[in-house]
Length: 244
Image (spheres, rainbow, N blue to C red):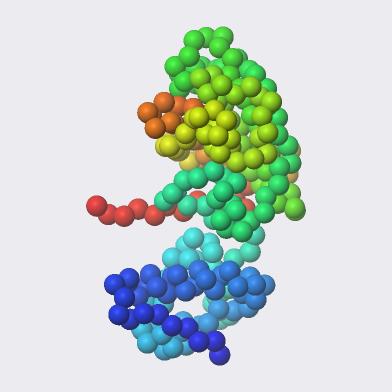
């Protein structure tokens, strides 16, 4: 039997230590391949804590869809689900890299379009102003899982000829001295229309996680308006809020 330990003298709550322990177990190949996690009673005895403390930690990871608990069977690592959190924000490429998820670009298209009313109001630009629009279809080897549609403020200076295969916000900062400092987001659920069905390789009417993101510079000026369409069977957003 594997040996697990936590620090009873630490100021970190016991349930949080157990949560960290479980997150480490999730990364181990044998557990990713379906091995059952230690049962709660055995783990609690080995750690010298109550079963309720172990259950509290396990429940959180089940809620985040990192673990799956099956009555009469046990707890296993969830399959084919990518978790992204809202307690911090970075480029999609960096975030997935931190999780060890290898993503590929299925398609990148950049073109100049006349800004619609929503984009004009957001960017505070005049009618008939053209903005750079970029579409990126991204996914894993088995298929696409997310479509990003971005509009960039003309102030940034993008031409459309940049290498958009590199992390976007690194590109903006290094080549255009534009720092992405704040992300304002809205998340909702929608149903796939014919266009999303074709691009994300899902059925018309399938659920899609729709995220609107306004990215601003340190002065609060918008630099990017980003629309993200995620396959609901592949992504989960979790939010962690601390009480003041």
